[in-house]
Image (cartoon, rainbow, N blue to C red; front, top):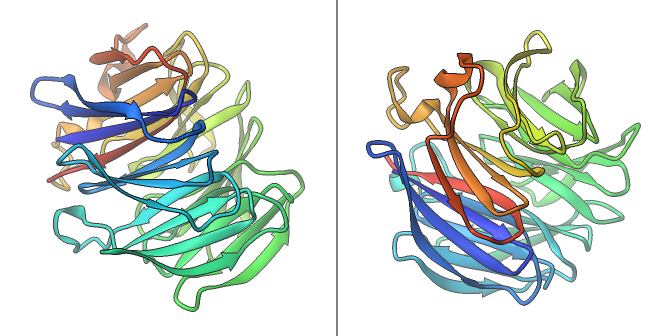
Length: 315
């Protein structure tokens, strides 16, 4: 089973359970959890988190569908959240939570219990996005000062920073060992080697990209202003397939359902979820993309302006 968590401009947090057996989205919770628009969400195992323009991070017990706490260590809007859960963690329990903010800092938390460990100055201006390496020892950030930074999470400091030719809005590590990472700047996607940040591939979307989700076998899903969901083969830089007009408004979040059993036959690994700014969340079967116009497997309408989407997966 998977849990999807979405945030909205209207300050509401939304939770849905997705059951692959019945291909349904069951509402779990929805209420105004922040005092300003929600800008980001993250989920791992039974834990969820949301960051808002009210400078606060809210924490959730997804299994109990309840809010369990608030973190107030930033001096600006919380712009990005990421959990780190070791592969051996029971039930996917996260070990750490990282948060980024318009104040230019990244906060590192112990996730059991939630204790603030360190604040790392990452950028001179606000942090646009962050990504945690699969080892949990490092993180990448991109900032509104048009720079990329590497954070040493063991020592709790910034270890590297470089200027970019233009401001990036998204950064993500690829699936697997984290040997590659992706950056997005407007409509451009670049693929980089994690060892030296050297660019090894460049791809251009027709319109501005607002969300991405790495998948297995070098596939990267992107979407945004074009309202389509595009699967890129990042090895060749070509489009593998497209879900045209996946939504009627811009897409603000994509979640790739993890392969629960680490087998190619796992049903869950073929599903992706997308959320658009008009409040619609849809689940798709990527095996149906050969059809001229695939239909969503499940759909819900939150009737709110969604801003972000995250997913948590149970074995």
